[in-house]
Amino acid sequence: KVLPSSSLSLVVERIEDLTEECNAVLKSAALLDTNSFDTDMLMVAIAADTKYKSLEIDDKSLDKILRTLIGKIMIEEHSPGYYGIAHNVVKVAISSRFSASTKRRRSGIHWRIGTDLKRLVDNATTLESDSEVGFESLLIANHLSKGLPSIDERRKIDMVVKLYLQLGEAAIQRSAFATATNILETTVASLDKKTAWIESYALALKTHIALARALYCLGDTEKAKPVLNTI
Image (cartoon, rainbow, N blue to C red):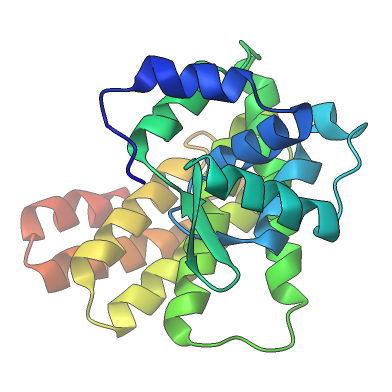
């Protein structure tokens, strides 16, 4: 079966008819904001939203819920154990049903997803490939970045900056200079402009040097010079 891209109202109606557990899983999958996820990642996203604490979703019931959502053409299984939202129109329909929660609350959910995904990866005994590590790290960094508005601790902000810096430096090592530039520009933007050069001097210095290096390697000397002048 194929879901027509013009059937937004139909999809919204289907979602409204879902059980509370199915809705929770579908919204959590959308919050992960990735094209592919496994059940461990999904459980992290479900646990991050305190609204779902009363729901009893474990590994066994999650598998059953996923099968239900696959049957309704809302979730698809990419490969054994890996899933994704079935169609872009489903993503739009899910987004339209998110409650009008405050920006800080949504930010807090992303922060919890990011920190719990990082813990999940750190505790993993094996990693399949460098590309998988890069994908997971970027996903974690994106959630932590979205979560920054919900926190005030410089230590946690520095943790996000360090993670982005590691990703940017890894991209430079692979000669992926455009990717490195995009990542490191986000890194610099995450620094507190008022206090970074005082309270996190070494980190701010490393970040700006890495960005300037990526820009020079990309051949964009005009953008690299102001970065160096900041130093």
